[in-house]
Every structure is written in structure tokens, then in C-alpha cells.
Image 1 (tube, helix red, strand yellow):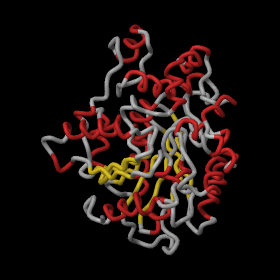
Image 2: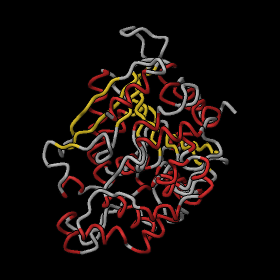
Image 3: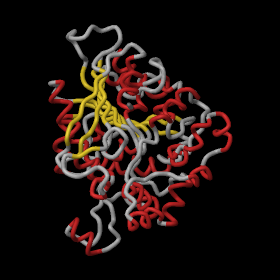
Image 4: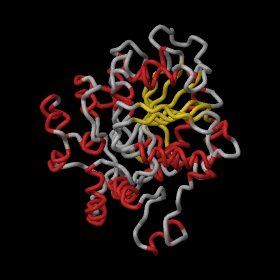
Length: 386
């Protein structure tokens, strides 16, 4: 029913909508939603301007890209501008909860973090989408953990070589790598309490919130939009309704939070605690050796990241997850990585009024984020439209 709801939601605005699945190298079945063209284009008409993949963030799903009105949501704008739009779902969320290898109710299914999403999910999405469209490359738009997965992939040489040549543009909305300055109270408390580690040892594999989540939600939000009260997403992302449409947020919360693994949340809390950008730490030298052939987890070395020809960051001033201090740290590492090829240094748009979810939910995102993306895709240079 959720798949049908998602498809009908798009179709009700007058757009074509398709549902696809692909299988990762390690057997996870990922769901992708597609808007092949805009409202004014006839099916089968020639002339797609190219393919764009929009990858959701932590606890999100593809639905976040389409929940707002057509003049407010990026997926519709891209389709109307002539692009073939694909919205994949990371393993373990409500749409990608299947495997050809293990039972989705088993502990083995939930034994993943964003390490696997970087290593397996992104290449599987690229292979499938480019095979279906016949294009040689695509533009990648990531939000939040959708950028983390890409930073991980581009920092892993054997994955980067599959991704970089096939990426025309990389747009990072609320880019997240280092999270030591994260102001999300929930993530900090998890990092302090090691709740995740306890749950992992108890064998709880999918991360499901409980009533305690209410302690992290602004009571004012609950009054204006009751569904937000139970939202893990609001608790993690620390968002306000200031720039958002209450109806869209209520619809969004019918699908979100779309779920992830306990291990993934533990991975995030490790990063908060230690100010590192590295693979999951099993917190036992022998287990790390079993997994990584070394007693400590391998770092993702962002100073050696391989970037596509065009990378653009959009960073919010009120973002408690992609904190401005952490984004600045990321930008310095990008400077180091591109010192021999400064043309690849990412341009950064600072969107001062934005919180973490405004990049996908704000009603004025066209002005700050989507208009620049559309102009850059059409051949403009970042920063020129100001």
C-alpha cells in the first residue's frame, strides 16, 4: 500500500510515475521511484536532457522528494525541465526491505550501516539507472546521509572509479561527513549512553522509536502539527515548521521516518562521539580484524577524495545535523583534495535560514536551492545567478 500511495501521490499531480527494483551485489533489493518526464511531455517523446538521481537522507525515503507541491518540490521541477528523475531508497527503509540472500526479519538483514550503503547501494543504483536510460552519466543530488554515502563512495578508490566517470554533477544538500559539532540532542544522548550498543547486543536490529522520543520534540511543533510529535525524524533533525507547509509535513510523516538499522544509528553515534569519518567500529580489536584485517576501522580519507567535475554544496545556517562548523571542516578537506585540480573544488551556497529538512521540505527551496541546481544542470556556473 505504501508503494501505491507513493505512486498515486505523484500521479495525482499529473506526472507519470514508475516503480522499479534492483539488487545490490550483496543481495539487498532496493526500490526506486521514477518520474520519466514532466507533465507537458508525451510519453516516448525524444529529448530527455539527462538523468538525475535524488538520494534521500537518514530515516528518509524517496517520498521526501515529491511530498511538496509541483512548484515547491525538486523532483517535479527536474521532470518539468526535461530530466528523467530517479529516487532510490536505501537498504532497510520502508521501501527497500527485502533481500535475495537473507530473511528481512532476521538479524543478518539488519547488519548494515551507511558503509554498505556507500559500497553496495550507490553502485547498484548507478548500474541500474544508467542501464535503463542508456545514458553514460547522471547528476546525483544527495540530502544528508545521501551525501554521506557519496562521500564514503568517492573516498574508496575501488568504488570511486565506478562512480566518478559516470557523474556529471554532485549536488550535496546539507552535506554530512564529520559530525562532532552536531547539535542534535538525541544523537548526543545516544552517543553518551551507548543506547545503540546496548540494543545491538540485545539483538534489536531495526531502530524503532518509543515514547521517550517526545522529550526531544518541540512541544510547539506538536501543537501545530500533531503527527510530528511521534516523529523520530524531527527528534534527530531538530526541525521547525517555519518554512514548511504543515499539510506536506503531515503527509511526509505518513511515510517518514522510514526506518534504518540499529547498527546505522550506532555508527552515527560513534562519529558524533569521536569526531572521525570512518567505517563502523565493532569496539573489539578481534572483530575489527575479522572485518577489516586491522584492529581499528579504516578511515574514509576525505583529503584524498575523488570528485566529479562539478560538485556543489548547499549548507544551512540552522542545521543541527550538518552543522556549519562541521561543513567548514569538510570544505577545508575538499580544498586539500583538489589542490592539484582546483577546478573541482566544490562551490558552496550558504542558506542561512535553513534547518536540516528545509532542503527537501521548505516551500521556498526553489529560490535558495533548486533554481541554482537547474541553472547549473543547464550549463551555468555556480554562483552566477546571484
